[in-house]
Length: 146
Image 1 (cartoon, rainbow, N blue to C red):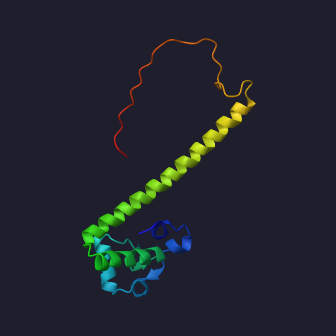
Image 2 (cartoon, one colour):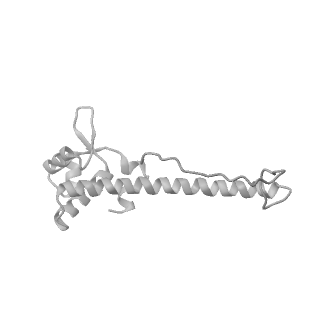
């Protein structure tokens, strides 16, 4: 699976509008296979007002990937489910890293901007009148894993 598989931001790619028969045909599968994958939690289709399953193009790409992993690579469905879950976690982590990098870049730009306005560029933004010889011991707080 690739970023292309999970990363499209086009709303049409995510829209849950395909009936099960259409999605099955697009994925090259029998509709019963899609129902089974839904029960196993491999794919989460939307629901129409009448309760019928609705799939997106993203779901069809995922169905093809499930089929490839299970048939071509011989991975059982539990393994496929785990791989899909890890791919989603990886995508979320990559998005978070990208956001944090953008925030860090913005912070560096802001510091550079403030330093350029300072009377003595390259020095502390907040001038201090005296130096201290105090020793401070810092210990990070332990936080539960996120």
